[in-house]
Amino acid sequence: MFRSSCFIALAGVMAMVVGCWSGEGSLGLPCETQQHCGVGLECVAGYCGGEPSDALCGNGYLDPGEGCDDADRNAEDAACRPDCTPETCGDGVQGPTEICDDGNTNPGDGCSPTCMPETGCGNAVVDPGEACDDGGESASCDDDCTAPACGDGNLNETVGEQCDDDDPLCLDNCTLPLLWDDMEVDTPSVAWTHELVSGGPVVADNWSVTGRNALGRRSWDSGLPATTSGDVRLITPTLDLAPFVGEGIELRFDHARKFSDCGLAPSYEGAVVEVSVDGGPYEVITPEDGYTPPVVGDGLCDMNPNPLDGQQAFTLDTDYLTETFDLSAYAGSSIAVGFRVGWDCGNCPVDQTGRGWFIDNVMISRK
Image (cartoon, rainbow, N blue to C red; front, top):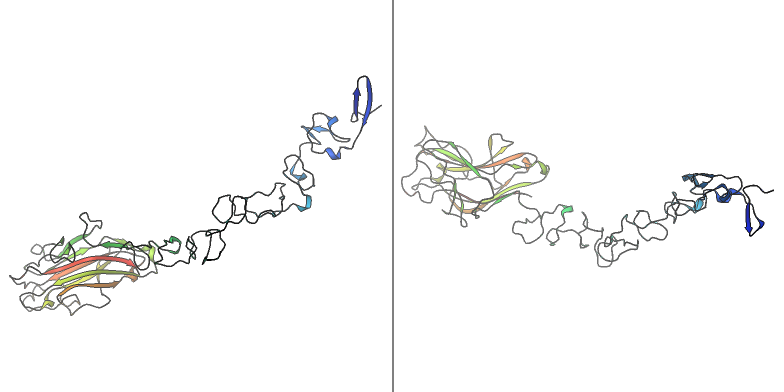
């Protein structure tokens, strides 16, 4: 008499015993009945010995759910991983059949979709003729595999370049101005303001963009002086310099001035540049080349002198020239720049046509 775990083959009316086997070799195999399993194993939940578990990975047998099993040769950098899955190109782990694996199957990034090296710029390998190759733009390499250099025509934002071309506003350090206005556009993009500081109501705020004594087509024009002393201020938009802590910031502009009056000394009139920090009061700042002699009284207006009396200022008449101011001390703050011109009371009733302060090409930029 045979046990139920033995196979019996029937041919017609004859029965022949085929054989019995140990169930060890069928562990984890699919089954429908106990007869599909060996001696000592039951068919449980469709598998001999029960449903396989991860514990079988590493036994050297290809159990259900496993893509491979090389026993103790399973490893992260082997053909079969510790979880019994085969190496796959693009999984970020370089297997024994891979020359590279950058974690994706994208072409053109130095490692091909089949995990073979790609030649040429961008393959993250410095090939002949390349100065560098970081697989793309980086702080030490342009995307054309040349070293970054301002002026090379290659925009590299990673290294801090905002421009690198023939744009007239692209500065020598490959940055764009924080503020620029040449007063030439019909619809201004810079929101200037201006105000009467003192001397009203006789003195009026006459700042405007005109063609009178302009450097180009138009310039800012302070207007003619009033018949009494007073001062007016032209103001830039507020600039947030918080992102530039520790960086050099400078102001440049072109200006001309005609303060002489009926042959009298021009130092009776004058102009200064000021800065308001975080909305505070305006303070006079000094240009890199300094101001001309200070504003002085003319002896006719001692009771009502120029508001800039005694202040170092721009006083002498000049054609257009460029002034530079260092604003680095204000990096990290919010600032507005003021252009303030002051008049005394002794203004000649004739020869007023060309008088005033004229400002153009205002730029605030990183050094």
